[in-house]
Length: 529
Picture 1 (cartoon, rainbow, N blue to C red):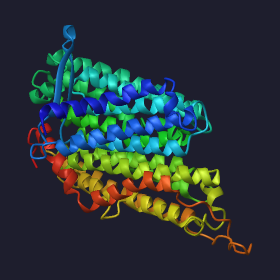
Picture 2 (cartoon, rainbow, N blue to C red; picture 1 turned 135 degrees about the vertical axis):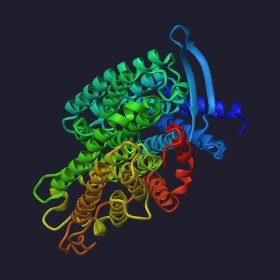
Picture 3 (cartoon, rainbow, N blue to C red; picture 1 turned 180 degrees about the vertical axis):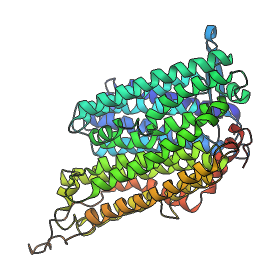
């Protein structure tokens, strides 16, 4: 594809959602109102996100897959000459999958919102916020300037705060405040580290700094800067023990807020570790890697045990909260893969990032639909004494929930398997200089975490999908409860791409690993594997 066309496509991917967000606040033209202004603005959201998704797919189709380590579609324009801050955009094999994932999930959320408008303020606001959130997330994965990365990183916080606070459920104000306070405090610390890297390194250009491999930074500078950056990114990742904002935010958020929070916002933290910390402060990354791996493994075990506690009978566990805690465990595998400092581990981390976005996005869609039908996500209320019998009451919904559960527990042949396996393979033989006995211990604990994941997911499937049969239509007899509405057409349209991609990534992992591996090799300066 022509370089200019690539540049325009990448610029459109980043800028169109921002323009669409502003346009959503304007009155709809009379000829485009349909049944009313509310429908018009919701349709506007679907249209803009569909165009952005099409541009992202076109960018991926025109990407030079023979050279995925090379930055492509680059735009480099001066912005603040006094500080050498530039509008520098580009994509490689690390960022391209995340761009497409973000565009896809936001489009599916806009489509879902068109048919399932959350109760709350005017739809103008929710469409504008969704588009603003999309623009900031896409920019985070596309910018190649440290200061622009920070601005994009911060840009997503306010839209998510309002999505939780205005359209959320019980205790939404408390959850929104915890989210914004944790992430803002983490961002302030991260900003100090980014400034130190940029000022000491002589530039804020991420490509130049990565090429220097930290040669312009002293060992002490690397340690201080990397620690600040890691703390800020770890809050968003989320890494134990900086995760405590996440369960409340997920539980209170509307369905689309939970999907985007789990599907794309968490990935910004781990992407920053791979894009910034590993190549720009390699000595510090080597120093902190064992501690990062230790925190990651604690998060895997802690998240799984929390989910087991929520899944047991009588615990009054909330399904959304359970999936939120499962994210702590799954993102622990991502952090463990990064901490190995090997191409195998980092590729596994990037694969797990995408798999988690697909699978957990699907699970939050399904749990949101279940709440719309039954009025609750409380496991004890749903299951009663014998189980919620979703297989009998809404068989397609029950089947999809079971599919999401087995994909989440890492069943071979589905996307969740490869990332976790590669992260543990990386821990089996970590980078030179790292303690192999320590990482073998981490690998064993992570493997135990996969068993715990299987345990709580199967408990959820048993309690939600199995149980008494529904009442026979027209007879009034039967041991169970009335049937629920099964999957609607628009829900099938929103969920089927996630199911298909989960299967495709599980059966053909080379499609993604072929993109990420050359870029990872370059970021790690060739690595030792």
